[in-house]
Length: 397
Image (cartoon, rainbow, N blue to C red; front, side, top):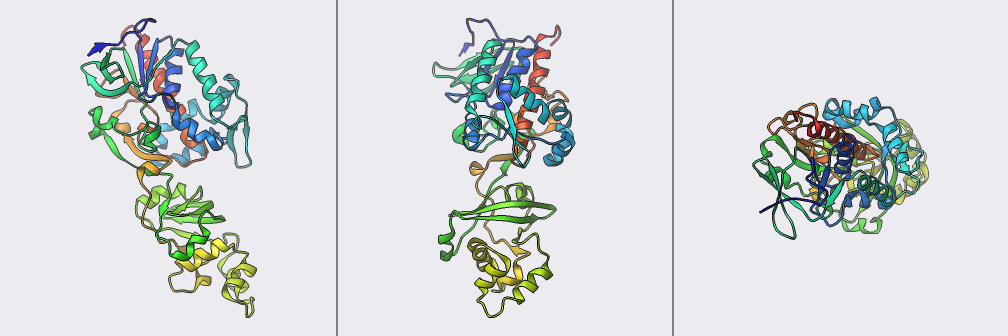
């Protein structure tokens, strides 16, 4: 095993992981005067960011920080100082500094004007290059050798000795894009890590054959509820189950075993639904559901599929969803679980390993889609990177 060296000189800070949290950590550390080297086991950085941006990169949500914090559940107190320091407004200003204008959609979601992630990423990498940050690809972190981080590389194993290290290796979803969750075992921190679980993920459903004609159909403007959680939105009938933004925020309650109910007419109360159905005359049940309640064919199909007693009209306001559980971890948009906050100090430094910091999805928090995931990755990356930069450049760090 050889010691890592670059023509630019030995780095002060090593950032392991080149996703959004790692990139922001590198920027923050370099901003404090540290020489920063980034390491990633993939051949190119920020693959999950690029994938997320294919259909429009939702960077943040235009709302007060106090409102945003309610979306992070039990982790909100831990994340509060980081999001207050770098919340939605700061994210937009940061994008503008990279030459990327933003616009806010009708739902408050904020996107780059270009919609895609690639222009933002190119501008960001150019900024980091100008700050002297070096990016070393195909370097897979394998753990520690004393104070040194060790990596497998195409040229053999190397040791990296620095004053501060930032771990930004992500969660365990979308393994093909780089985050595989193996760091928990490699770091020796498994006992400080809450096991990963799927978040923002669909449900498995074993449909009857009659549902095949509705595969791919959306069911719009519905309310889903599970335990204490309630969400208005849209779901899609997929070949293997139920998907969609209306469902994803409920995954914490579904993981806890709460049943799922679907309100297909949230703007009508139960008595109004009953009265309209009673006024449908001698029409068939399907025609009354369609004409009197304006339900789509896909919504009517769900009623017929899941009505417990064979009377779909009775269950329009509270249809029990029969499913076989959440889809696999690797199919999830994000993950719950990760390195617990009690293993970290207020600067996100590992209590048992001074000079080593952690950020991003590898921490034990979760949030719904809608800009909350990326905002917290950026905020924790900036927080940990700034702390690492201060540690590395201080006289006694």
